Length: 44
Image (cartoon, rainbow, N blue to C red; front, side, top):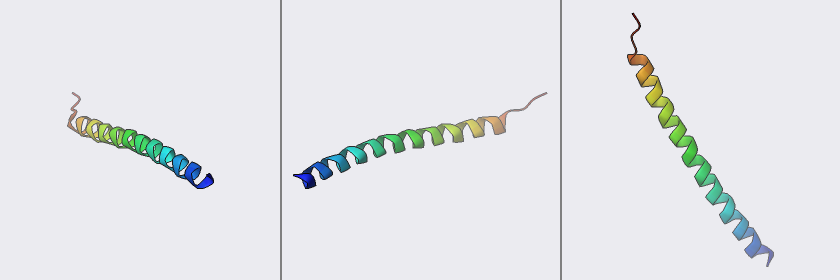
């Protein structure tokens, strides 16, 4: 019983990790885009 509960908890933690990691990757991608746009910015 405890083993199946552990597996279920691990599955839930893994799903949450995947979700958070996906958000992290999207933020990094947005940051790269922002850096590129700032590098192109010219102020006169």
